[in-house]
Image (tube, rainbow, N blue to C red; front, side, top):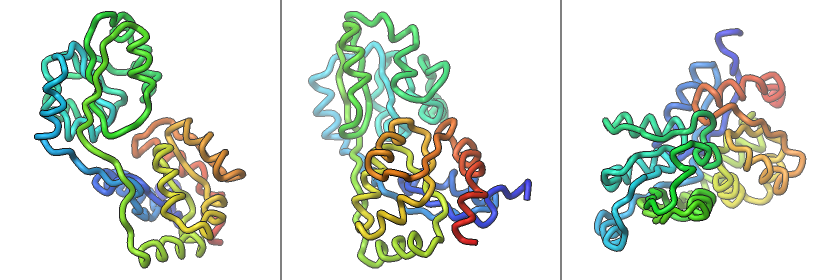
Length: 259
């Protein structure tokens, strides 16, 4: 049906629980079934620990927010510098909090795209604060330092794999092996690695036969390395509508698993 392009399609959603709702709603509006199995858990750091880190940092000229989680847990520590957002979802979260986004990618939604913006080209001598979770890519900081900036990280939350019970793992394994999961949405390399670590090795074959949808080109390489032969599709972006369109393009193939 034209108005239900995902009819009969079960979609595994690996996003953190509090961020899965929009995608679940979009999938269900398209006739599909959202299966929420978060592979990343977000834990905010204490304000006291954040303040302790800030004590050794200079006031920033530019503050870069890496994600919506960085905005949610770190906007209070943005200071008065110009605000930059890596992608549209991050920018929307900043604007929803009544702050102005001064720098955002003209196209794209990753570090590479943000680094192309003119305001981040000539940054010699400027202090830049990157607000993020624990760990992550070093491209932004490395490139900005090469351009002469002083870069500080302010980590305001941590990411970790959830602690599932044996029964919960058995249930998701049953759904994979029983063909109830037609497509899986994997947002990042970390998500894929956590998913593989959480699933028993006996389920990896079923995962490798399941089409994956991702908005991140880096995930495609990781899938190729870890799950050779797994069909993976690059969505146009990380938004719910963009993810649903990518799944819909796979739907005839995906739903065939259950036919």
